[in-house]
Structures are given as C-alpha cells and as structure tokens.
Amino acid sequence: MLASDALRALAMAALVVIAAAHLPVVLAPAVAALPRQSLRVPAGADAQTYHGFSAELRTGWQALRGYPDALPVVVANVIGSAVYGALTVLLVLVGQGLGLGATGYGYLLAGAGGGGVLATGLAHRAASSPRTRLMLAGALVAVGAPLPLLAVAGSLPAAIALAAVCGAGSVIAEVVGDTALQRSLDPAVFARAYGLFVPACVAAIVLGALLAPLSVSLLGVGATFVAVGVGVLAYAALLVAPAARAPVATF
Image 1 (cartoon, helix red, strand yellow):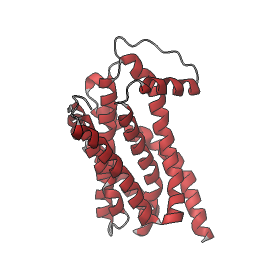
Image 2 (spheres, one colour):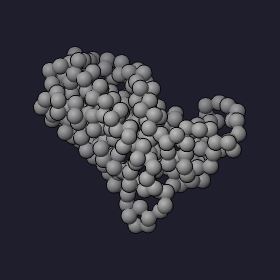
Image 3 (spheres, rainbow, N blue to C red):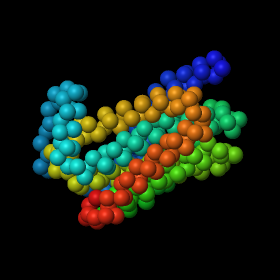
Image 4 (tube, rainbow, N blue to C red):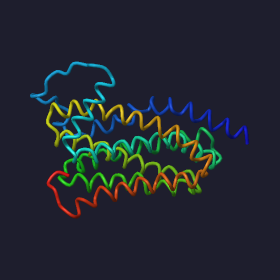
C-alpha cells in the first residue's frame, strides 16, 4: 500500500512537469489550425505595459466581465486544460493496467497528440462556423465521452483510439475558443483578457495533475475517469442549453 502511494506521489510530481513541458506541443496544432486572420495583431491594438502578474489577472478579469458571452468560452478551455493535466497522470495508470508501464503511457500520449494533429482541418472548419457554442460543446463531448471507456479499454489499440478522440476534441475546443474570443472581443479587450486566460489554463493543467492522484486514491481509477467524463459532458450540455432557447449569431 505504501509503495503504491509512493508511486502515485512520484507520478504526480513528475507528470506536473511533463504537463508543462508538453504544453507547446499540444498548442502547436491548435495555432496552426487557427484562421489566418486570427493570428494577425489587430491594427487598433495598442502596446500594453506589463504591470505585474496579479495586475494582469485583475485586468483580464475586469475585461471579461464586460463580455459575459465570452466567459463560457474561457471556462470551456480551462476545463479542457484541467482534463489534459489529469490525463498526464491517469494515462500512466491506464498503461500500467494494460501491462505496458511507461511505454504504454508514451503510446497513449502519442495517440492523443496524433488525434489533435489529424483534427486540425476539422478544427478550422468548426472555428469558421457562426454556431460557436454548438461547435465547442461538440468538441467537449469528444473529450469527455471516451474517458469512462479508457478505464475499461482491454487493449492498447482501443486505448490509443480513445485517447486520439480526446486529443482531437481538445484541439478543436482550443481552436474554436481562441477564434471565438478573437472574433467577439474588442482588440484591446482581447489583449487584456489573455492576461487571465493563459495563466488560468496553465493553472488548470497543474491542478488537474495534482487532483487526479487524490481522486484515484479515494475513488479508484474507473470512478475517476467516469467523474471527469461526466463533468465535461455536463458542461457541454450547459453550453448548448442557452443557444437552444435563444439562437445568437456568434455564440
């Protein structure tokens, strides 16, 4: 029991670092899939002076408060980041359950990354759709639905396929969310909002990686996968509920 707890603690500490190290790799296909106009610096955006981390967070929050339609998009991306952080721990346990250890984790992580790369074309089309909430909810379904199945995957190919679907959904959600913010916020507000958005996503990765071992020790691997998956699907349902009642051009 003590050896198992020590292994989980070691995995937790090591994989938080892995999560941060892989962040540029995960974001690369998302940046590549962004519509080209979203990558340009707006002509009307003024240069911003850095006033410190806490000040940037406050400025970002104040900017987003004036655009309530943008908050659900930010929350969706934060949730996706937290899932990624949790998977840096949970996929290790899946690999161990398949009898492959660290090698299995590498295959599963590669599957998630491969799914993200293959989804870049679909992400571009989804980001171009005016129905942002629906596209974002669909991407979150792709992230959350495979998670309970990952806990019971009986073979490596099946687990890799499920991880690939999660990776594809993550990239689509990232691209749709970033494009929606760029499209809906004023240039100066967009720049200030990123002072909150980016640190929130990075913190969510770390938090997900920290909470996953605790959840596994309390609930078990299978229940943790189910809880995370259900949470993601529940938020996806919340995203489309307002749109179903009152269609909006952008969100």
